[in-house]
Length: 130
Ligand code: HEC
Image (cartoon, rainbow, N blue to C red):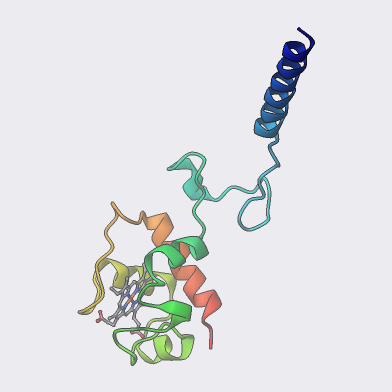
């Protein structure tokens, strides 16, 4: 009798601990550390704000790691090279995403909305500005 009671309370105790473990939610920090500031794209995809940096890493980094270019070394995303190819504004970069020159894959609006495309373009111009 005593043994049964003891093992029962162990079961109850570990169940309680499990429950506590499950409800232990630590507040999530937003990706850019600016809690409360929601990017305009959040309206399109509720709960999933997409930053230029995150989008770049997802869609562009495979071919453009750190702004380089794995399949055409003469066309990286460095500001100096972009400028020499007359690519100076976010619109210029978005245009290339929609209509790449040759080997780059095309990103249409169903993959990247205009806002997403622009966020990536601004990230590129601000990040690889050498
Ligand atoms: C499959 C590989 C691949 C992916 C993925 C890719 N690119 Fe490219 N990108 C290239 C290649 C190759 C070129 C050289 C031009 C060409 O062949 O189209 C290029 C050229 C560019 C250029 C012009 C660079 C210059 O100096 O003229 C820009 C801007 C650019 N890519 C932006 C992007 C962005 C933004 C993304 C992500 C949304 C992306 N690329 C994803 C392969 C890729």
